[in-house]
Image 1: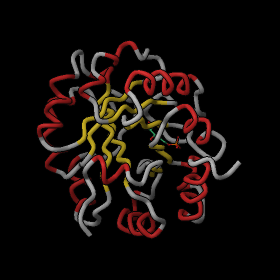
Image 2: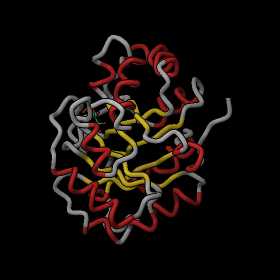
Image 3: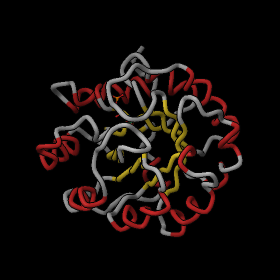
Length: 231
Ligand SMILES: O=C(CO)[C@@H](O)[C@H](O)COP(=O)(O)O
């Protein structure tokens, strides 16, 4: 199967549910990837944490490179790290397709977003619940993807912060209908429909998939709710 890395190809499947590989079984990543492929996942959301920008550690480019050899799913890397400019090339070389940096980690994200685009990857900018949309507005033309955090980054299983809904609405208004807007944190059956109505089209989901016995049923149910076919 050819990797569907291009914006148009991947977003053909929107709204998309992106399983957050922070909540998976790290002791059996190969099996988790197989289960997610069988469950119909189009992409994997890779939560990269450095124990500095966020108070948690996950994995880095070496693990991602190994995952890359296991699957052609789109890799949506969310770099929750300080100094992303220093490490960016490693994530490009590891095979990440979408690469998102944090607004709070870079005084001027524009050169880095451009580097991501120049490498032929989709460039994303994430921002935390406490960061106003005004802080990222200037960077929007350089973003293929905006990731709105609906929890403080660092851990899965936190409660959804509804402040994110207004931010998604504002970004949608500013960036237009074609923009990928991803929402991340506390997304599940009770929050995904409101997030979709606000304007998100990619939904990062950890607990509501990995805490379920049947990943396929969970992803189907969430996708249906995002499409408004479940009330
Ligand atoms: O990036 C993060 C947390 O920092 C998220 O991707 C969470 O890992 C999503 O997990 P749930 O909130 O869905 O359990």
